[in-house]
Image 1 (cartoon, rainbow, N blue to C red):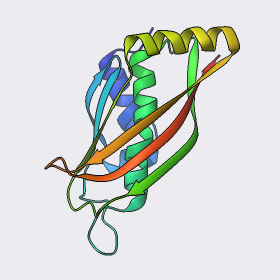
Image 2 (spheres, rainbow, N blue to C red):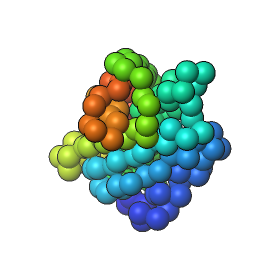
Image 3 (cartoon, one colour):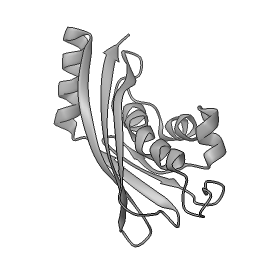
Image 4 (spheres, rainbow, N blue to C red):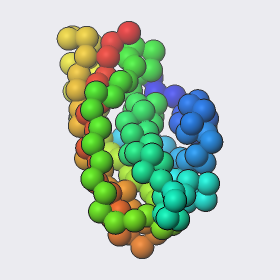
Length: 147
């Protein structure tokens, strides 16, 4: 059973101290769909655009947020195995990312993890600014593990 939205929100935004300090906000937390936002304020680098570490955090957290909203948290837990980020342009404002898994993918991953102890899934994401311009592309390889 996945977690109630408010618990998933609290864990997404506050469980990891670094994430909490960054000001990341979960705007959408639904089964199979999350949208997160990282504010520029407090996350600027030496030239006034968003710090690469803040963008990396925004790209990595959706896998955990999807886990909280979509998977049986009593039977499984997530880990990240690989993360790559390709920067396209400076992020000069708040940045958002959306991630999705459909119901069939979620069920297949839980079945595989239950049978084999683990199941891997990739997330190919786009980090976008307020105008919808892509500032970075990410590739994350996550693993759902049986408890």
